[in-house]
Amino acid sequence: MFARVAEAVFLAVCPAVAFWVMHFSPIAQQDFIDPYVYTGYINNFEDLFQRYGVTYYGVRFGLIAPAELAAAVFGSVSGYFFLRYAFGLIAAGPFYVLVRQRFGLPAAIASVSLLLTSPYFARALLWDHPDASGVPFLFAAVCLFLIEHRRRWALDSCAALCAGLAIHSNVFVAAPLAVFAATWTLLSLAWRRDVRAIATRLVVLVSGIGVITAVAWAYYRWRVNVTDMFSITINKSVELASGGMVEWRTPGIEWVSDQWHVLTPVVLSLLALLVRGKRRVGFHDAVMWATAVTVTAFFYVVQFGLGGNSLELFYYFSYLLPFVFLLLALTVDALLSGLGTPSKWIAAVLLVSAAIGPWLLYSLGRGIGYPTRFEDHLAAIGAVAGVLALWRWIPRFRPVTRVFAAAALGFMLFSSFSTAVYARMIDRRLPAARSDLDVYRVALQLIDSVPRHAAAPGAVGFWYSNEPARGAIRSIQSTYLFGHSKVQGEGRGLPHLEAAELERLGRMHLRWLVLLAETEAELASGRETLNRIGIQYTPVDSRILRGGTYAVYFELLELRGHDGTASRPPL
Image 1: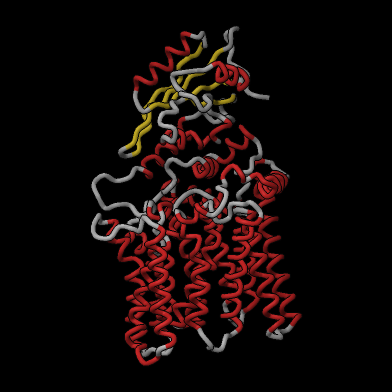
Image 2: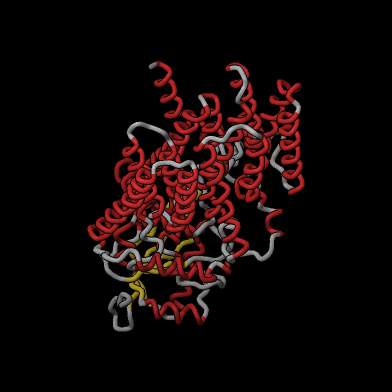
């Protein structure tokens, strides 16, 4: 009983401890557009639907509804952190139980520790984006489906609900989930399992997804009177699958040398085979390995065969994470098997220490940073493969090679995700802290400062400088769907209004114009421009939006037509 309580406590505190130890960037979405669009929907749901109708972004039920609930109960910022803690447990809990059941306590603790301290997982979790919910729910669905228990129907029902929430975070999840289901079915038949039981479990899975779909439909019908939340997602998915991703795609394979993390599932697939050797393969081990390999193959086919971005865009590569860590668990089990209990714990500690130690030094600004060359990572792969080969084929030296193998595997995991996109998840423990959380707070203040459409009808537009091109103000304004509401194009922005921008301003039929700037002088220049070109307005509000170290000057103007009346909202 005491052991179970201790394990429960470990799981409960592990996400918070991992966040503190690794010093992850708490809200890693500064300079992005899309996550701030979701921030807008989470904190301003009904207003955005009233202003812009149904959009592709607004129907991500699996992300938006839980985040809305968390924000309503705990507040916007505290709710964000509470939900990330919950998502961490949703992923780690079932994974821990599965690995504990299949491979024992040391392997379970090591595998979950590697998951929660991984910049790969942090990159998916720590922002307002569909993979923040889609990855944990997908991981939970897969693990719950694989856990053995006498109450099979309860686990399958929970897995099905998680699968539904994952799909309604991002419909792309349906693909790896379908690959998993197909692989599990084929292997179940190969192992001569009961056909009726197989069919029943698949029906439960599909039914659970249907239940979540019905709940999502009812939710949107109740909140914003939307009865068709599916067409826009289907149409957008078809568009993207039919070549719509080419804008964000780099041809060829040279980009892999900068984003070598995409090789990780391939490398772990091969290492899992290497370390397991001729050991008898059980059904669940076969499902875990075969599913990971087939899902990895699917991602590679989409990227290189179908012209997609499943690997190149890190927020799609995120959906490979559950299968990467299933492969890792298989490798860890093979590495620890055959050892006595003290030796297992020593090897597990070495593995985790080698994986997170370099990141801790990096966060402190000391010692090793992270590899900046593809060759460094290839060397790390070669080292772990060589040591594992020695451990596998020369039994005489296993007490020594096993120790080196654990450390080498841990360092390879560090190296695998030391590319720029994941290294940025580790905040340096230095006085000059990043302001991501401060920018997030300013974005929430902007939402509170703009009049709600229901109380003060009329279209709202935002005008600010485009210099720098990827400034924080651009992210903040994205809470109002970026291109739907910004006045300027890709030119200089405030205080300049080019001919095309004046034409756009006329088409927008604005009632409200919001000026945003990082200095008060910029606001004055904007007003001078409006006066010079004869745009009439009434100042309504002026304030400083401040979050810690970051501040934005905000001014709300009510535009007036030539007849002295407010401009019409868009039809």
